Structures are given as C-alpha cells and as structure tokens.
Amino acid sequence: KQLLDKLNILFKCISPDIDEKRLNNETVRNYVKRLSIEKASKVACSNQKSIIIGSDEVADLNGKIIGKPLTKKNAKKQLRMLSGNKVVFRTGLCVLNSETGKYYASVNNYNIFFKDLNNYLIDKYLENDDVLNCAASIRIEGLAINLVKKMNGADPSSIMGLPLIKLIDYLNRFNVEIMTK
Image (cartoon, rainbow, N blue to C red; front, side, top):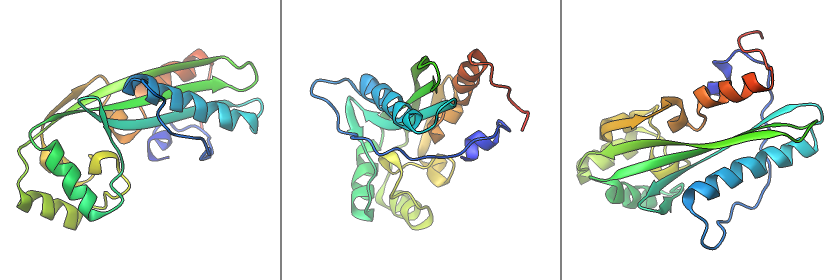
C-alpha cells in the first residue's frame, strides 16, 4: 500500500487466499512468479473490468527459501544463516486485465550482501525492529540496513515487496495513467 501510494493512483488492497505451497522441483524463481500470477487471477475472479496487481516476495539463500520467522528464536536463527552471505530477494509481479485475461508477469531480483553478524548486533536489531512477519527477518526500510554490507539490483523498491519500475511499465502497457489520482 505504501509503495502504491507513491504512484498516486486509485486502488484497493485485497489479500487473496491461495495455496502457497511450493511445487515439487519448482525453482524459486518459478515459484514466486506463479504465486504472483495466482494471486492476481484469484482477485480478478471477483473484480471485473479491473487492472489487478499481484505480487509475492521470497528470500532465496542458495536455492533455499527463508520465510517469515514468526518468533524471535527463529528470527535469530535466520539472521545467523544470513551472516556473511548473499541473499537474493525475488519479487514476483503480475499485472492482469480482468476483462481480457491478458497479463504481464516477471520476477525482479535484488541482492543483499550481509555483514558478518555477531550476537550483539542480531540482538540489538531484534530488540528494535518488528521483523517477525518479514521474509528472512529483514525489513530493509527499517533497521536492517545496519546489517548490510552492500546491495544491488535493478529496482530498490522490489526489496519492499513491489518493483515499482516494472509495475509502471506494465500499467503503461494497459494505458493506466500514473499520477492522476
């Protein structure tokens, strides 16, 4: 919602209820793309004549998905795993025209290289930021920037769950006017 507000367009947020289990032998990239398409398709069923945006993000550590920790104990374990490593945040995006069924979908990758994290740094981070519902215990728009050595990728907004550069491209393809709320 925060990111969509930056585009100054009218929208409503709907959380679709889909099965988010990863299929056997499904690559992380294909998984996150499929979820974004399924989310958009599910919302399209009850929103006729609409442009639907579906998105999903995962943290990929060498092919292993690091999900939401839900507990501080799990968050601490995840952060130890990330220490000194590169994690690829993969954000699936689908923009679908519910009237025609036409859609555009892609995956945006954003690389984060983590510092060597000691227990003190991990504990301070977890004491001061709410990350229990964030993939890999990382909320980059919060205090997680303190844990990072460097980052790179085509679209920094994707690390917050929605690649705005690609989204604007897809919305333009559907003739959606940006900045006209």
